Image (cartoon, rainbow, N blue to C red; front, side, top):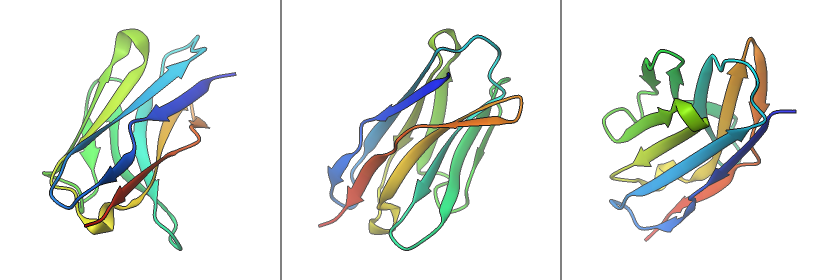
Length: 115
């Protein structure tokens, strides 16, 4: 079974930066896409950013220009560099791995932006 684990969440002040990491393991076939989702209290889960196997990236409008997604194919690691964080970025951030339509999720990491 594919395992996915996030790390790097925490409490920061508005305007600060944070980097999230995602490590996928027990991978025996090619990954199609890796993505970051987030879920704020009382809201549904939303796509933040994704990166395809070929390196093409996509961002939600609310984070474009502030967040950067990247990955290292060799060890199935993905990052989300978050800059100029806002209070509304507060959420649990989840790593998602798509392998031929099968979705694998991590447990999530809490990001709290507060003054």
